[in-house]
Amino acid sequence: MIINVPTRTTEELTAIKATEVRLERNDLLSVTDWSAGTDVTMSSGMIAYRAALRDVPSQAGFPNTIIWPIKPEGV
Image 1 (cartoon, rainbow, N blue to C red):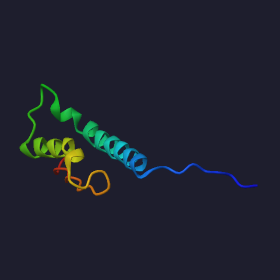
Image 2 (image 1 turned 180 degrees about the vertical axis):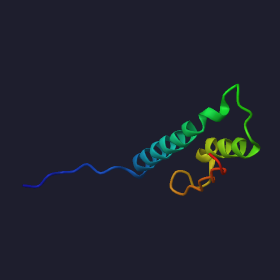
Image 3 (image 1 turned 135 degrees about the vertical axis):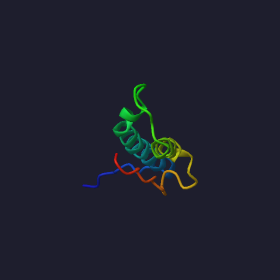
């Protein structure tokens, strides 16, 4: 018996990968959400890190090639 398995297009695979990368980025941001509280003074390193995480989808190789920012020490 032959079973036809649907294949995904390149566009579909890219969309799936983009969603996965955004979910990972969101998880990394959520770990640092405490630093964005009104009672916390965010360090310049944390500001830059969070901005770089938010900018991940605008990277040239997104979603297949990601340069993840380095989390500042002490986080």
